[in-house]
Image (cartoon, rainbow, N blue to C red; front, side):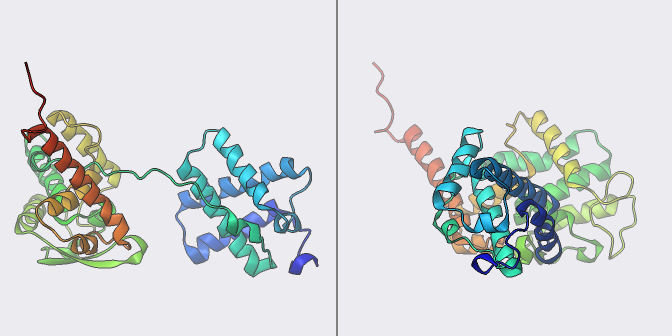
Length: 315
């Protein structure tokens, strides 16, 4: 048994299914994440087969050096992979080794020495306050059936008024109606938060329910598709595409941009950053901090455009 390994000659690719079963069953990772992780680790083993010039076994994995890991990342970079893809690949590899340590005694100290490349921080692109109001009002002007227009207004009102994600809004059921003054929302990572609900949002949802032709029992989805089934996120995105085209808004005006707008506009009007973190359900304040950067950027542009000393002199 090499280096404490219980199965040193086990083929590394053959170990992938057991690891994926663990991620799916115990970790309950999303199917797309599983697919991406499988591609990343499968690609790693394919690279190592050529790089090491032989079969990739658990014993071979345990002997990898930091230079081998960096060669893999460099090769992926040459293939055109961005920093976020490389970060995910390294995360997948560490997940495999973490599982392999418990299952087969697999260990590779060099992996801890390899740092993932830093990815540029993505700045949220919220819609303006005027655009948010226009989007919420626009469904009533599209000629859609009254109940569908009311439904779309209600959903957009929730996204902007409560800062919910699409999945969180579509998870509401008949038991949530009429909406209370505060709503308990379960978001990413199973984190639960309490979100205040504005009277305008409650009124918009009540108007939709009053017009909806489908019976909404307590266990039924609150928001319904045309034929009565649960409304899907793609339908909300499609509705938003039509509305932004009608209003002449950019492609960045997505349903999620209303959640960004919720945070940015609260901050612009004096909202506390930690309170906004709680309202959004962010696990880390650093995630919420990006909205302060967005607001600071807007203030800088406003200053440059309007301050007398910032304006260029004209002859």
